Length: 299
Image (cartoon, rainbow, N blue to C red):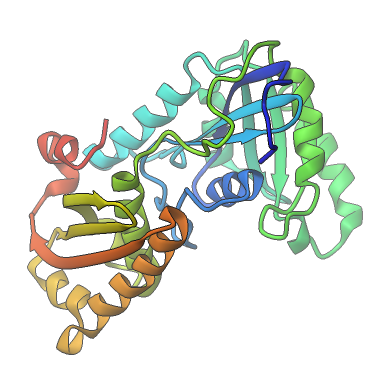
């Protein structure tokens, strides 16, 4: 974050789009230098639109991280996630279309097709650190040039920070001239309440088995800020009765670990002491219930 954004001459919204699990949230966190978008190895980790703000001496980027575009509309949650993608694309100034190096399949094509034809797109080829033979990169780029016109193509590694500065340098001239849209110290438009729920959900994804996370949500029932203290009461919503015991764990050990790790990240981001109380609630069919999704913050 720069000391001042008074000299900003360009500012705009940049949607980060791609199929699930290509590293969109990792890229957002890397670019702004702060974790605000949760990350795990499982698809569907990002369910909401999350804004991250990067201010430099000359430019302000307002990044919009989106859920991975869902090609199978299995339930209301999937549809809500795709609406979040479409909403993010409406009126943005630039799109970062993220793919994984060496892979460009039907799911990538479906995500690319959602981006309006008139949009300016920077193709971000992520995970180049995993490419065993670097000589394969140029032929892969040539193949992609034939798919659609891209304003820029930038290979990088979001996880390791390789070429991320080059991405910002390439994208900056593509933003419109204008004054900053947010204050110099702002890094997101999301509230601490929202971020608390997301950090808790991330730990559930990371620490529980493959079957469970897609039937799990988090609802913050009480959030109180008292100076340098945050009092948070959070309910973990599960879809099946059998999942309740899985989340709680033996003698409550699993839920305690989830809460402890989430609390540590909240304290780091909020710069405050966090008192976090968690419990588990059964709400069958929540992922296919429009009213339940709305109450959990899904648009």
